[in-house]
Length: 114
Length: 114
Image (tube, rainbow over all chains, first blue to last red; front, side, top):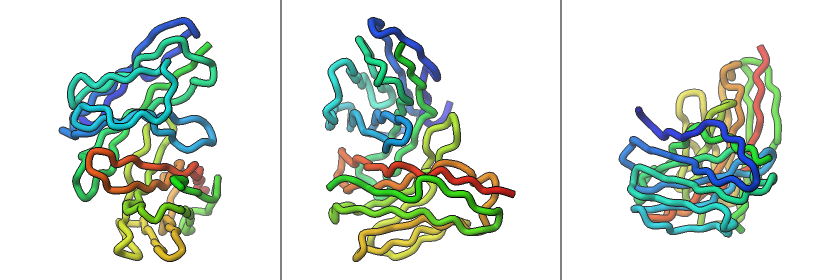
């Protein structure tokens, strides 16, 4: 496996369910990110982890809970979601502190809340 | 202050033409300006990036033009091909070790017709 892998690719969940999104990077990067992508809106930064510490929580509702157990793995735990949370959730990684820290994105998890 | 404005929202160009996508920003602290390409069902992929100490950067058929005084930058695709049909996002960030957050534009859906 190379790059950034996200699972599952698609997820349908009810508003009372609890589920988790998983992201794994095989690039040796030291920073990981969660972004939300909705139609006709800019990609919205949700969380930033650098060296396994959360350095940014961009006013995200508490029904989204991130976890970064090590530098290669990132989770997004979901509970009591709303239909407006339906979107593509993208994970990315980068090598923070270098001259060209362009993100490498995964293919995303398409989340539908019913 | 953190916003990046991108235009046009969609663009249709004949094969061989030169599509141009424009972005403008307000925050003069931004010092890294990447462009991303996204195909359906995939995450965005880094295409090319520029820093404000140069006015132009070329990589293959892709060129970024940067106008620091106008706080604008643009992507040009030379000899465009149908395979270039995708959504393109500009972005900007501040180099800040451990917290390099990319702020994205709203995207341009580009269609290259044969």
